[in-house]
Every structure is written in structure tokens, then in C-alpha cells.
Image (cartoon, rainbow, N blue to C red):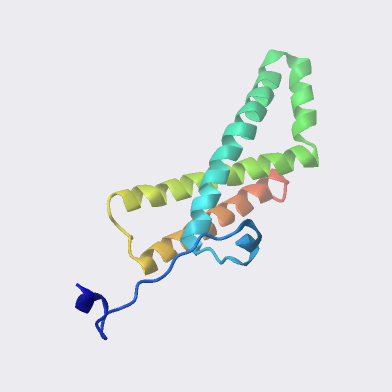
Amino acid sequence: MAEVAGRAGAKSRPEFRNIHVFQLSSYRLPLAGIVSILHRISGALMFLVGIPFILYLFEQSLTSEISFENYRAIVSGWFAKLVLLALIWAYLHHFCAGIRYLVMDVHLALDKEQARGTALSVLVVSLALTFVVGLKLFGVF
């Protein structure tokens, strides 16, 4: 047994250590990890902010003509547009990352390079779509 562990050609196993809270800013997360964390953040954002905000706006738009005018006043403000843009990003990112995870569930794009490529494509596609929708939201076209 001692001979196997002490062989000259044996690879040493990498040593993994827990990181401290103060080391989080210096820790470099891989791109797939960033997409995973953003997927969770976008889901939480849609659930905690999106559902109450959208339901409130929906209720304001259907109650009466006066409440619809209140709805238009709320939605025309720059802050509400930023909140809507954040919710739009959350939806688009969550959707694109969800498609990525469904592809990974059928055992495609699992190796390191393909996973990095799909993570990058999720970020690029979701940000590009958010940019286009944001231009429409702020009245550029």
C-alpha cells in the first residue's frame, strides 16, 4: 500500500480549500459559474420584484380609465422604465440560461470548452436582446 502512494510517477491530487468571506473579491469564478449565479439572481428578481410589480401594473390597467391613466403615468417615468428593463433582463437571461441547462440535461456541451462557449453565448444573447428591448422601451425606435 505504501508503495502505491509513494510512486515517483503518481500525480498528486489538487488541494481544495474553503475560501474566506474576505477572499471573495479576489476569487475568479469561471464564466459558467457566473452564468449560474446570474440565473439564480434573475429567478429571484423575477419572483420577488417582478410578480408584485407586474400584478400591480396589471391591476392598475384594468380597474378603470382613471387607474389606467395612473398606470400610464407610472410606466412613463424613467425609474419605472429602469425597473422594467431590469425585469426584462432577468426574464431574458433566465430564459436563455434555462435553454442552456436543458441542453446540458440531455448531455450535450458538457466539456469545458463547450460549456464556456454556451455560457458566453447566454451572456451575449441575453444582453443583446435586453439592449434591443431597452431601445424600444425608451423610445429610440
